[in-house]
Image (tube, rainbow, N blue to C red; front, side, top):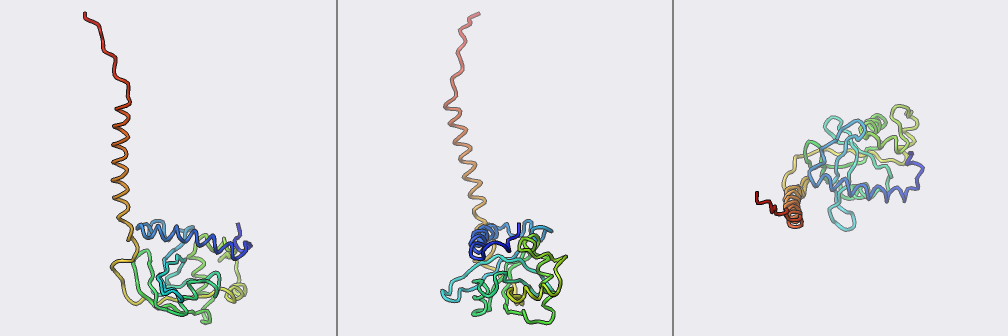
Length: 207
């Protein structure tokens, strides 16, 4: 399936729905599970500020760690909401499989080594690249340069580790609560089965 043939507006709606699911996994504390696999790729969550509302926004993105800096791409180009937000407020936070960091985001699409950096991000994206019709093994430098006419390449310089509320795993309390509810339901279900079971016949044998 080549997602590059799907109308951009429809594709953006699909990805928004998928992004909600990915964010839920991170908030449940499952963001690191399966992260970095060959097919799933490397996934982070970018925490940024809405340019109009001032509200906190969360966006899952594929990324590549190059020399300690985080690189990602805006596949929808300059119309991507998260990209437009960081151009107004570049101070962001990233949730990575190995930790949570504050950082400073900037567009580096014009860098001389942009082609190599773009390839690194695509390789780290797992199945996402081929889904968009970008095969890192076959794409030429000229084709990459053409994509960078619409794609945006973003670098996030990590500043310091972040702890406290509002980070990955903030909904991890759901797991013990869910287990407790499940145990209670099983107990209730077991008692109801016993109550509904027919009584054992009474033996009248007096021998």
